[in-house]
Length: 272
Image (cartoon, rainbow, N blue to C red):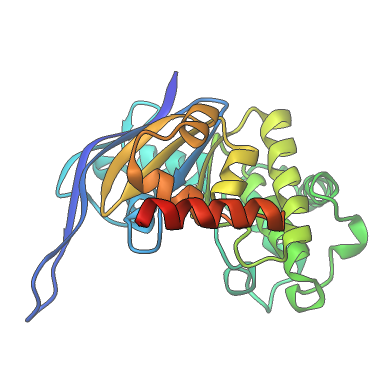
């Protein structure tokens, strides 16, 4: 069953004195409940505009964006309140997304307070400690500020904050692209563990196909505002049918030098 659906979504941005720019051109895609769905494309392909439509920050020119039967662009007050709790966003850069003046307790517990998900401050604190433990941190971190953590730890805090309100859909916007490779693996493991434990639906937006292959069960590939290919990750990434997907796969670094040379030679032969 699809929890999130976009059907024939069009979006054009206009600026005074400039030609309108069509960013989304008939995007149709969905995210299955309880699964991790990847959305892949290069910078400028329309990924961020899709996220903004899902989060209700912009409205499509035409087409529909629905979450669990709710039409997001036209959602009324009660439906919006539900969306604000059940659909959460993990940003690309945890440094800029975490208020440096707030402690971890306040950062993670803010949503619990706003949505009245705890009876008192003690229950709220217990819930924050539970979340921190789940993402690999501890109660000792409650009174610390974001500046005293590494990049990977800050992203764990951001994930804990998003999970604090018990969401059903987690939208992850390039959540590991700013992290070192070793730290990326740790954060990806946290996301996968949380998805399995909580039955989350995750839309994982990225440009790195190696990461998408590792965590996503299905994937949609977007180019210039058009979904050019979508389906099971193993099928799409092993036997891509579109040349753009093949180009993205060829851009993935190969750690084995002999294999890299073979692939480079194959490209030269094809070009010649």
